Amino acid sequence: MPDTLKISMQGIVKRFGGVVALDSVDFELRPGEVMALVGDNGAGKSTLVKTLAGAHTPDEGVMKLNGERVRFTSPQDAWNRGVATIFQELALAGKMTIADNIFLGREVTRKVAGIAFLDRRAMRRRSKELLKELDVVVPDIHTWVEHLSGGQRQGVAIARALNIDADVIVMDEPTAALAVAEVRKVLEFIKTLRRQGKSVVLISHNVQDVFEVSDRITVLRRGRRIGLLETDKTTPEEVVGYITGAAETKSRRAVAQETPA
Amino acid sequence: MLAALALLCVVFASQSEFFLSERNFTTILRNSVDLAVICAGMTIVIILGGIDVSVGGIVAVSAVLIGRAYQLGMPDWVVVPVGLAAGALLGALNGAIISKSRVPPIVATLGTMYIYIAVLFLVIGGVWISGLPNTLSFLVLGDAFGVPSGVFVIGAVYVFSWLLLRWTPWGQRVVAIGCDEVAARLNGIRVDRTKIQAYALLGVFAGIAAILYVARLRNVEVNIGTNIALEAIAATILGGANIRGGVGSLIGTLMGVVFIKMTQNGLVLIGVSSLWETVVIGALLIIVLILDSLETRRTS
Image (cartoon, rainbow over all chains, first blue to last red; front, side, top):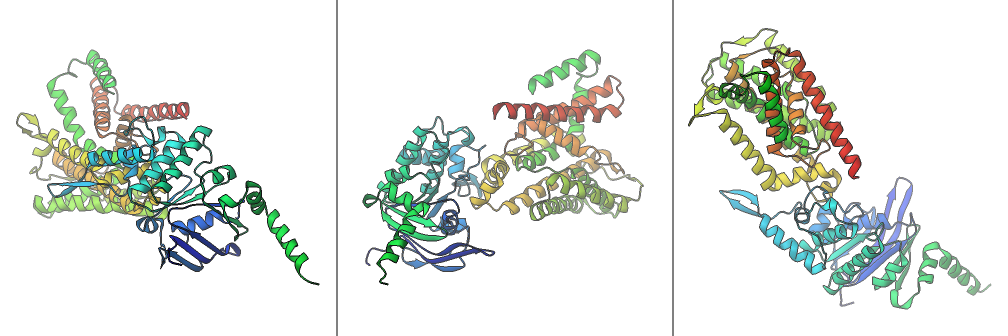
C-alpha cells in the first residue's frame, strides 16, 4: 500500500497481572483522518490510548509511526515524536496563565548575559496565534487556566499540542462533562485540526459526537477490536450494537447458521 | 498587607514613643536580615507545594560549622563556602527524602529537624561557641551609601530569587509542580530533580542566614534556630503564599517578614514578655490559614 499509515498497531497485548486488558488489538490511523475509538467501560480504550501515548509499554505487538517501528518509553517521548495525547485531566497547571501552560516544559528563552531568561513576549505572541488558528476565544492571555471554561481549557490543551507541531492528536473524552455549547466548540476544534491535515484519535462515549466528526470508527470490546467501520457507511444503531455486543452475538449466530451440519 | 503594616505602626507608636524612631527601624531591619533571606527560599518551596520545618536545624548546623571553622583559624573565604555548602547539602537531603520517599514534606522535615538539631548538640556539647571574629559583621551592622548594608543583602537575595522564579524555565517548573504535580510530570518536568534543587536553594539561603547570624552576634548558642521555621512559614503565608502550592509572592513575603519583626520589636517595647512572641506569631499563622481556607471554600 503506497500511502503509509500514520500509525499502525498490530497484535498489541497488555496484561495487568492476570487480567488481559488488550488481547491482540490492531489499530490504524491514516494521515489527516479523525478516527473515533469507542467501546464500553473496561473495553480497553484507555489502555490502548495509554499505550499509544507512551504511558504503557505493550507486552506484545508492533507499533509503527509513519511506517517505522517505534516504542514510546514515556508520554514525553511520544510528544517529541509528534504524537500528543490530551488526557481527560488535560495536564494543565491551574494557577498559571494560558501562555505559560502552552509553553510549559518547552519555554522560549532569550540569553541575557549568558543566562537563559523567559522570552515572555514571544510566548504570548505565539500563544495568541495558536488560539486564533483554533478559534479559541479567551478573555485575556494572562488569565489563569483555572478560570477558563472546560471548552476553553480543551482549546489550550490542543494549542499546546499544535505548538510542538504534533501531527497525531489523541483526545481522551474531550466532550465529557462539557455544556452543550462547549461540546460544539470542541467538535469544531477537531474539524479544524483535520483541515490542517492532522490525524486525530477521538475517544468518546458519545455516539452522536462520533458521527459528527469522525471518518472511521474503531470499536473495542473486552480487549479486542471487534469493528472497524467507515462512519459514512454505518449507523449509530450498528455502532451501539457493536459496543454492547449485540452485533457480535448476531453475527456469531449467523455464522453458526451458515455452517453446514 | 501594607494597611496591616501601617495599622501595626500606629498601634505600637501610640504605646511607645521610641517605636517610630530611626534607630528602632534600623534595629528592626538588622534583626530581619537573616529571616528575610530564609523566607525567599521558603516562598519558593511553598510555591512548589512543599514546606520545610527544618530550616532552623540547617541554620544551626551551618552556624556551628562556621563557628568551628573560625575557631580552627580559617579565613572568611573558607568559612563562607563551608556554611553555604552545609546548607545546600542538608537542604538537598530534605529534597531527596521528600521526592524519593513520597513522605509528606512536613513530616520528612520534622524528622530531619531533630536530626540536624542533634548534630548541633553533638558538636557543640551544650557550650556556646563565642568570641568569633567580626570580619563579616559589616554585612549586617554596617552602612553603605548611608543605608544599612542589610538592605543590600536582602535586595540581592530577593532580586536573584525573583528572576529565578518569574523569569526562568526553572521557576515555571516550580509553579507548575505546585499547581499539580501529576500534570507537571505529564508535561515532562523532572519533578524530583526540581524539588531537590528548590530545597537545596532554601538550604543555601539558610546557610547565608547562618553566616549573617554569626556575623551579627559573633557566637553560636545552643538554642539557635528554634523559632526560625515558625517565623519563616508565618511570614511567607502572611505574605500571600498558598500553603497548598502554586501561589506566592516574594514582595508579599518580605512584607510578612517586616510585619513579624515589627510585632516582636513592638511587643518588647511596650513591655510584653517575650514568651508571648511565639504565641502571637503562631496565632497569626493559624488565623491567616483559616481565612485562606474559608476563602477557598467560598470560591469553589
